[in-house]
Image 1 (spheres, one colour):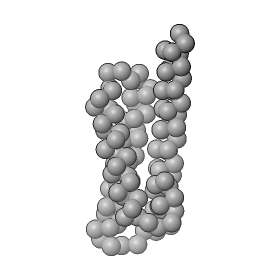
Image 2 (tube, rainbow, N blue to C red; image 1 turned 30 degrees about the vertical axis):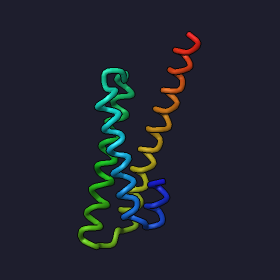
Image 3 (spheres, helix red, strand yellow; image 1 turned 180 degrees about the horizontal axis):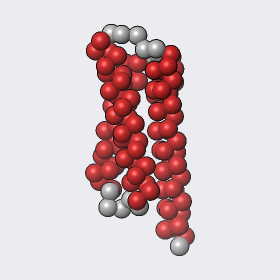
Image 4 (tube, rainbow, N blue to C red; image 1 turned 90 degrees about the horizontal axis):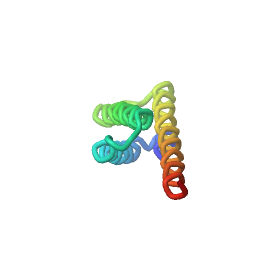
Length: 104
């Protein structure tokens, strides 16, 4: 969703969604760090870092009321796609683990 918002220049809404996703990522890390394996924990930390970067850039744009260049939009979009990829991979990993626990 954030990718689409950035691509359509809905930066304020993208920032709000980014804030929400960042907060949820932090909550997962705080609650489940001990249960996450190292690659999953590292992925979540990377997603958190990317979201902080996107959030910071969007906040700066909003605060300064300055246009975002096409190059900046591309970088924001790429960061959002990386976050989406991380969450898709982690969701698949969690589903696989759940299946393994259920079926031994």
